[in-house]
Amino acid sequence: MNVHNLMEEYVAERVEETYNQLNKKRPGWLVCDCESCRLDVTSYVLNKVHPHYIVSGRGALYTAQKLVDKQLSADVDALVLDGIRKVATTLRPDHKIIAVQTILGDKEEETPAFNFPVITGTVLNGATFEPLVNASVEIKDESGLIQMQDSSWANPATTFKSTNGTFSFWPKSITAGKGNVCKRFHFTITASAQGFSSATQGIDIDLASDAAKKKQFGSTLTLKVQDLILFNS
Image 1 (cartoon, rainbow, N blue to C red):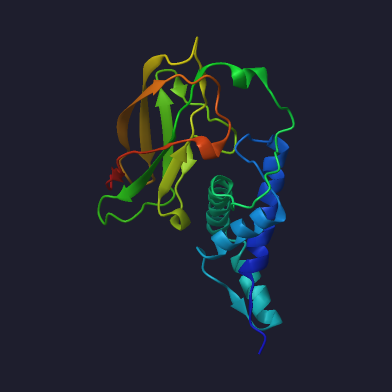
Image 2 (image 1 turned 180 degrees about the horizontal axis):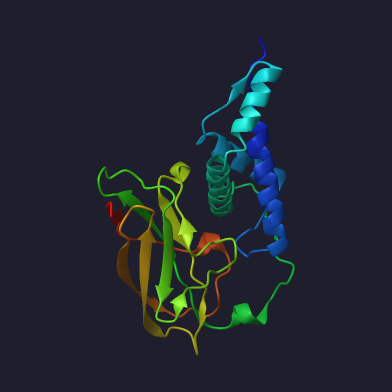
């Protein structure tokens, strides 16, 4: 009997499409998009999604219809982007890095700057304390929504079942007058979802300016914030 997991093709296609889209934008943290990296990302996603096995043409048609589901598509795309980021930060020791950036020695990157950590957290359902999916999470400062380091990071972000209700932000670096200048930044993070009262928390980040802007995701620290708990409205 020939049993096949249709998700393999679906995930592989989404991985290829996401890498192609990222290559058009050329974010600095994406240091490689070789076949080995793409296979690593595909394996990462397949280990986190439910398989859809088929044994016949009818099964293929039925499963293909399920793959059209918007929620499944959103979950897979979120996992693909998460996988690409993880693979980019944990390249194999013998991996030959292929720089994706086309412009080297950008003078803007040599300017002293405040470089922010990746800010991550989880949205929970206050009734069950289970991860809350389809929640919208935004991060702001006194001027409004914060711009991300590159456009592949969304603000507001959406939580998905496949990523256990987590969200992450990578605020864009801010130019500093010189290196080693200390400054405190205040942000507010707000989570909201249909049928729930929104929740907001403030965070303060103390930074010392670096000699240059950091564009490589792998050199960025991570700040875990308190869980945002939403209760039925």
